[in-house]
Length: 240
Image 1 (spheres, rainbow, N blue to C red):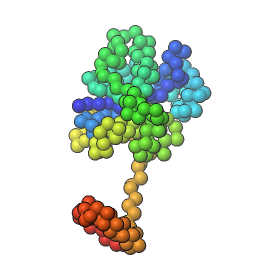
Image 2 (spheres, rainbow, N blue to C red):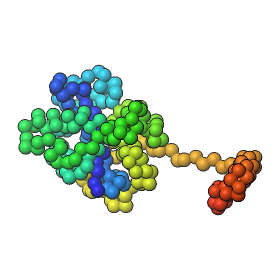
Image 3 (cartoon, rainbow, N blue to C red):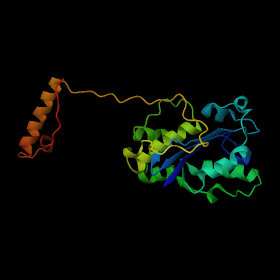
Image 4 (tube, helix red, strand yellow):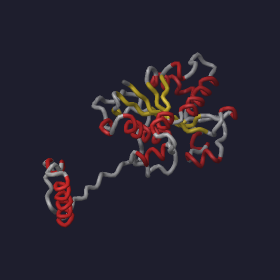
């Protein structure tokens, strides 16, 4: 099963006001495992960027002046998502912008939904966690996905974060490792830059804590009439 996690950054919020995509980032999953095969471009929008949008993503018109236009990468993009299940957080927003870009080209591409299946991870989160906050930041906190390095929004970085959240939300942590198959040549525009996740810190119990633990198990053993399940496990604690 091939899945693509996709995110965009834009010049503003409404295509009706002529706003455009300025960053497009995707990561690939094969059988629920990250492959390292990313698709990522910054795009020149041929228009100004709203101040509010720039404060969110930090992308300036000056930075984009030498970047390709959407029409320059559309063939590669459609080829990348074709036949895949594309997962987007608040999909109507990103799909609306993608379809607007395709429409502006006056091409035969049609809609992005004509080439792939769209899954809205926000709708999935609302179904799984009704009545709770389900923004990407809220889901990161709920599923303990590290995102403290994200001072600004970015399409590729947010797609990578969403991939972690989606895998945890729909099946468990065991799928977060990279697939053994190498990424396809020629598709990766840029991997995540400057982002490393801290190693887990392991704290071992000291002697006093182990004594307290044993006393707690004694109480459980007595209350369960000798059926304390913890005592039946071969944990192998070593006092420090």
